[in-house]
Amino acid sequence: MWQRYVAIGDSTTEGLDDPDEAGGYRGWADRFALAVARAQGGGLDYANLAIRGRTTAQIRAEQLQPALDLAPDLATVVAGMNDVLRPSFDADQVAGDVAAMQQALVGQGATVLTFTMPDPATVMPLARPLRGRMLALNEAMRAATARTGASLVDLGALPVASDPRLWSDDRLHANSAGHERIAAALAYTVGLPGFDDSWKVPLPPAPLRRRAEVLGAELAWTRRHLLPWLVRHLRGRSSGDDRVAKRPVPLPVALGR
Image (cartoon, one colour):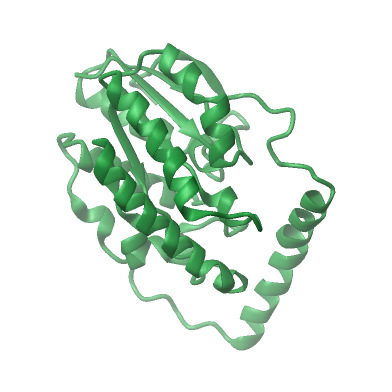
């Protein structure tokens, strides 16, 4: 029975794009916390220190010590996507930072989980040049996690994880269905009752789209998401500037959610 769950990471852990009912975001970490709390009949406190836009090095520098100070017996460490998007990307360095965070939390007695990232090329055709980086990062993450004693959910090895129907309109974050699957994968990995490996099952075949539909979708995505992202980064800005963690203090998980 776990008493305190702490999640650290970036926007993926923060919960984008899985809207809650209060104008914010829920996400797989919230869903996983609820699954754990329900499985053990309550008694779980949960904090989420993740902030969107953070690189792995920033997460280690800003979130690890506060997480250790909270003394969790359950933790998730998920990072790397923001590093993949940067020119200075180094898979071994990113995996090393993740491994250091895992080791610190495992060393304090926590059960620690993480997951690899899906292939972005299926979701975002323009991201094909980044595919090699993601594959390299996933390999480095597998090797690092094998050394730390953390548990790895290998989403990067599952084709369904790259199904566009599990991703939001921005193509960088899971949608509500995607977050639900990630939470189910974590729940299954820690052996919660009522969870099986159905989160691995592919979706039914998608209907074929006409070329005009595909082109229209690409143009709309470029206008709504890619161009604003490029402008923001050219200005040296991040989506996480001036933001704080959504749940910095461990609070009891309400079972009625």
